[in-house]
Length: 540
Image 1 (cartoon, rainbow, N blue to C red):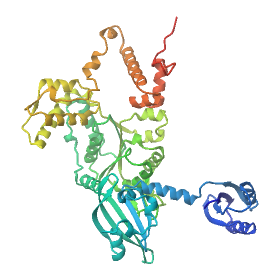
Image 2 (cartoon, one colour):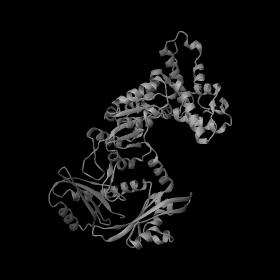
Image 3 (tube, helix red, strand yellow):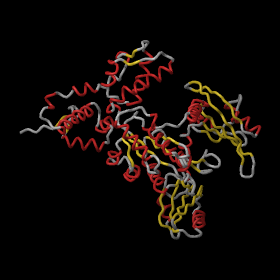
Image 4 (tube, helix red, strand yellow):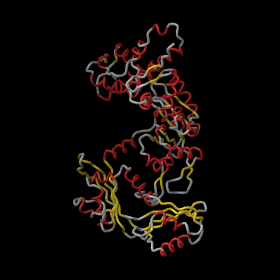
């Protein structure tokens, strides 16, 4: 309300506080718009909104509140607790992937999220408080649901500013606790997302260590170690560059563990922060606007007696990190809005392509969570360190794509294999698979030669990298000195090709703090933004 003032009052909890406030407001002819009481550890926190237009200013109003018995403090606030909750619910509501629209018993729209506004191609201000029949007069699911008072499900389409959207609509009537009809709600799910969900459900999750392609000693040793720890309940942390097969390794550990429950993968980087808690821990009925009736179990509960795979855990925000730590320590979850502690028996496997040690040093990852998950560590080596596996994988991928494309059997020539071996494979196994598929498609010959193998032009081959170090630099220099000189060259290239130290750190895949330490270690400097980074020279 325009001109209204909002205050928070803290009292030692006692009987009659609300009466005393109300009486004080009546005596001074102040109109209370709303009041909310919260009790916490022997104190009563009372938020009150007072109508504007009265002669008292803020200081005078606060002085008036100070006359109340047992008051501890009084302050002016910008938002009431209810307003904060409504803002949080709106953020959560708009973060959902489904479009949601609800109407009251008279067909007036009272709720709509951003996805629904996009599908219906109508701004929020025009959608809410309008009659539902005016929005989509033909084949209207909500209207049909209201008239028949039964659930209505149908595939529909709508034209938006970005083109046609096909979605699956599901409308259900809403009844109050007495069974009276009070409205209806419509959920709209993009059919492309529905198809992706169906494909994910139908895809077999069994992946065994025998399915791994690799004969290198490093991979064989990792598989031996993973088989030995598979049946333990201990947390496993898998690290490795992008594309090395961390999720496949986690699936194989789950299969080898013989746990009867499911394998549930979660990409921590893909989940919006406002949805992480509801997805992982679930919520109870009425926890927030739009929450499903009877609530919803979280993914930790869904993984009961199975394995939950927290992929890209290094990208998880600090808040959810604390909640994950609590689950790992206590073995139970508490749904949003609930008080019940629900035991969970799920094996936890984490994965990341980031250096968590550097992130802990830079304050970007909780130290206590790092030590909690870093019990059994599996470091999957990059493909450039597994030369013996490159040609083996390439041949097996080529046979697979030949069958898929219904082509005659192809082989890779000696020059083609040499080109594969000289490349450093920054995208690892995933990149190799894509390169072989592309080569199989564009080559009409039974042999895949070097010209048919297209690699990332920006990525120099291993041979070029090796030849980049002059022989004179190697003679008489220790390994430590050579590595130091090569590290300086890499650091200077990153610093001079980016606009800031922070961006250079991101390019190198290390934390800002770690890069600062290396700059000091190698005495690198940049006296002016117009000058490139260089090593400090000492005049004698």
